[in-house]
Length: 179
Image 1 (cartoon, one colour):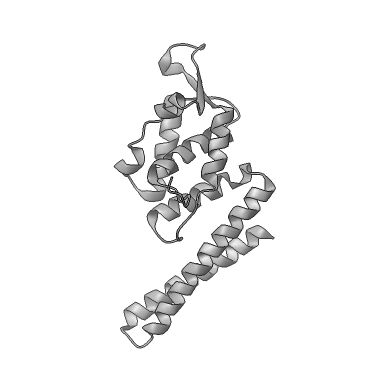
Image 2 (image 1 turned 90 degrees about the vertical axis):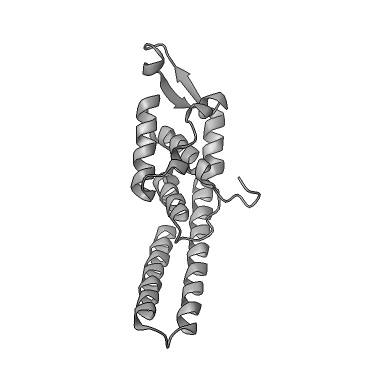
């Protein structure tokens, strides 16, 4: 991660895998985990080699997941989260979002919403506040652009109005999460 803790595509993949294991009440096979991660990521962002380039095997090598092969061979190995994996999951969940409009930011937001309930109350509240702040900044940016270009082509101003409404709706929804 960058020093500003903004998540990179590789870390989104790790967050999705670790969060999926954290959600599960039982171990998951490597194949099922890979399919679940690929399914989620491709439905949010579309197919992307950047997102699937990191091997989930690295999680095992780094001690973030453990493998139980007692039920059979490697193809039947079941993966579960280690304590180190849970700590890494919490760290990744606290990664920054630069804005709420780009594809990667949309993926990060989706991952945070999917796994938010797995965080302690204080961290969950902090993450919601951060997402609200990012959304407010996005809204301010689009409002400024709308004001600057108010007398331009109708298509552009209509699109800006649509973006303002989308961001206002997102802001209000995030505020409702805090309540």
